[in-house]
Length: 553
Image 1 (tube, rainbow, N blue to C red):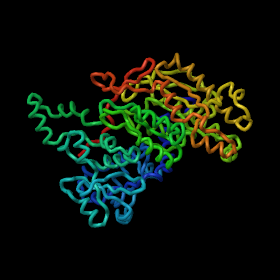
Image 2 (cartoon, rainbow, N blue to C red; image 1 turned 45 degrees about the vertical axis):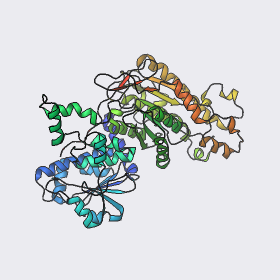
Image 3 (cartoon, rainbow, N blue to C red; image 1 turned 90 degrees about the vertical axis):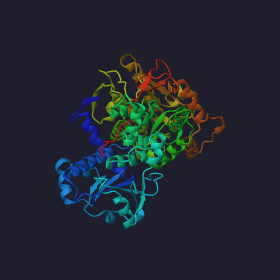
Image 4 (cartoon, rainbow, N blue to C red; image 1 turned 180 degrees about the vertical axis):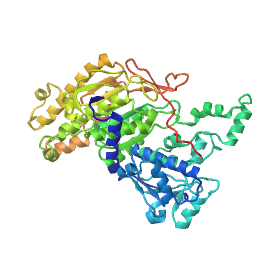
């Protein structure tokens, strides 16, 4: 999508993301790469490690919850080799990446860190975003076998290994190789911070290569198939994220109220979820509640619940959300977008007095900007006349589609994606006639009327241009939510909450009217395992493999 753009869209988005990574990384774990093993390594191994470090930077920048990455014990010679081929200054400018010559024991104290080692006696049960994780920069595991475990013991660090044994047993590969690169281990930690889901994190990063024992077994079982690499390719789908991947819905404003209720309901329907909200702690609490919801029986793997703390009332925040969703989720990029963020406040609320544009930004412009980026990720392009980059006012007031392309299908995307804009009954034309004493709600009502007008216009304009994309506006009445109760209590209004619809009941009824039901046992394509989206003109959602690590031993 473009107005007057001095930079390419991709470059502008990357710059916006880098600006937001510093703040986000402060909430994440610390990952320390111990480079004390590098000094005497052959040049070929050092080149390989440099590439892996570059991948760590790339993964971290695109992670829902980035970490603070430290290269500890960095020899000057290796630093020079890194700088010759990689933009170290640019990496450090993000504020989430640092280089130090001091050894790891001088950078982080033993009581504050966990040293990851494949030779550790105990497995890592969970990933705590408040902890520091040390990864040894081992270049040749055969010649340095046991080195990380010995160093952890010598320095007094707690050593843990990743739970690969149980994971590979679940995947039917108990004899598979367990050698991981530095970047694969780092990305597993980052994925776990976002999802709390070991299978998803390991599926994305554990290589599918065969062990010698597996190759011998397959050849014996298939004597006419001497090419074991071909056998591995044929069986790869059985070992990775399941061929019938759940489609993914992004819920913006998922930490409470209507957004949280949508997330819980869709979890029970079998969707994977990317939950987005401003407050990290409230978002984490909401995600924990969503993960407790039961999923449909018979699924090969539990749908993922990932979190991304970001402010979608800021254009650069919205850009980061969708950049991360594409880079992190890959083939699981959202098929559906539900935007329920905002604030339910009367005009005299203290936070609105301090920022006169807050109500419009969080309740209206956030929806427009989120839809703009959603349209782009689907492969649909349009031009908004009169809009310059980052000018949210122009995007909302001068909105006009003059050229489009149909949304692309393919990996993880339905051919009928859906955008659900959650407005308010206050946006209805007859609201002030039906409801008395609305003098204190004039600004809120005006914003909700703008939401209705924009979404109605959007639906009408897109219908003939992009019929594959479904746009739905839902306008809930007053619902029994914590925010509603708090606001009415602040105003001293007495409400008989027993007469007010419960938010979960309203959301369930809303979902029944939307094409959000998925047929988990529907027909699957012969090559591209699919989950059918039910609804008008619904198509099947295809799914490719999730991204692999670089697979280098």
